Image (cartoon, rainbow, N blue to C red; front, top):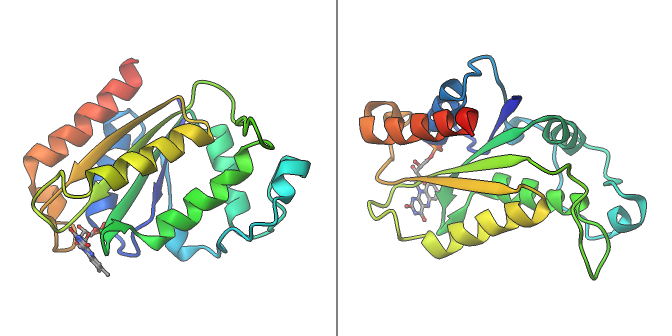
Length: 185
Ligand SMILES: Cc1cc2nc3c(=O)[nH]c(=O)nc-3n(C[C@H](O)[C@H](O)[C@H](O)COP(=O)(O)O)c2cc1C
């Protein structure tokens, strides 16, 4: 099983990254590649719809690296903090660009091979894990629509300091359980 991480926090070793890495390690891949869109040059979707005719995105930036990595992975573990009541813009930019995996209307059929799975790890400062539940459910559904057959989520509330997730044993255990489930399924 090939797993990769896509950590959308601008903070290196931040809470979302800590938990994404725990998922990957428990999934049996401590050498898994972790990509950090914040350090890459990725433009927002240009809305040109060229992908619907050509079958791929015509914007030649670092998103092409992510397209290749996602195509080759069985499991993609996304991480994002909540910024201003929603996912971080770095995550949303990547998500919008995944539109390129969808074929033309009216079917918008995904070109990703069947069987891919995703995990969405969301870290937030607010203590109530349900606070952004409706928004996170929409992000999860978007990942399913672009072609991930199964999307699991881990919401990690009450985290503010850099990397403090590592000291929250219940969250670390949840991340490890998700990782173990990925390799046993
Ligand atoms: C610009 C900004 C906006 C934020 N907005 C929210 C918010 O709306 N709700 C919330 O619960 N936490 C908010 N936070 C806190 C982060 O979600 C939290 O610190 C998270 O654990 C950071 O994850 P990271 O360490 O992976 O970057 C915000 C943080 C920043 C820097």
